[in-house]
Structures are given as C-alpha cells and as structure tokens.
Image 1 (cartoon, rainbow, N blue to C red):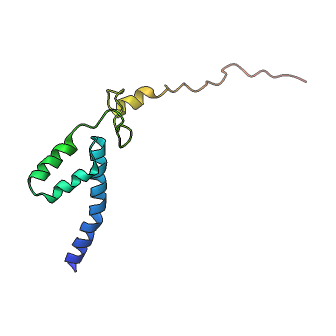
Image 2 (cartoon, rainbow, N blue to C red):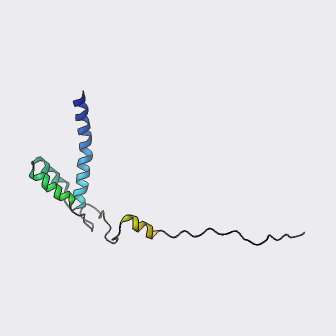
Image 3 (spheres, rainbow, N blue to C red):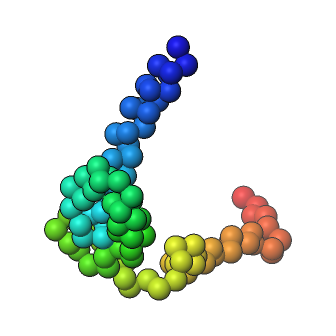
Length: 103
C-alpha cells in the first residue's frame, strides 16, 4: 500500500520536474531535449548541474523573451520602490471659519 502511494507521488512529481528543467534550459538557450542526459549515469548529472546553474540569457532567444531584464541592475525590490510615485499628502480641510450667509 505504501509503495503504491510512493510510486504515485513519484509519477505525479515527474511531469512538473521535466517542465521546470525544460524551462530552465530554455532560459539558458538550450533545448529541453538535453534532459535525456539523465539516462546516462554520473557524468550526465554533473553536466546538467552545470547547465541549470548557468546565468540566463539577457537577450531574446529562439525559445522566447529573456527572463532577466538587462536594463535593471538592481534587485526587483529596489526597482519597484523607485518606480512608484510618491504619495501626495491628503488635502487639508479649509481651516477658515465658515461664513454664514443671511438670506
């Protein structure tokens, strides 16, 4: 029973793992078919570790737009803070005495 559950979870995790590796390989400009290297033991694991730890392309490649914007050199947190407009102070109510008009 427990082995069946483990096998089911392994199969369920396989598809997202393949998709994630393909996306990462595409970010570096390589084909997702490089994942087939996992069928060759030991050496292939080292090659794949090198591939997935490489820096992403900063320009658009055949697989789509670059995942990193080369124009921003700062972290995402800093860039979002500088792009925001400062909040304008709320308008203060008129402090003068209200005028009473007689009809």
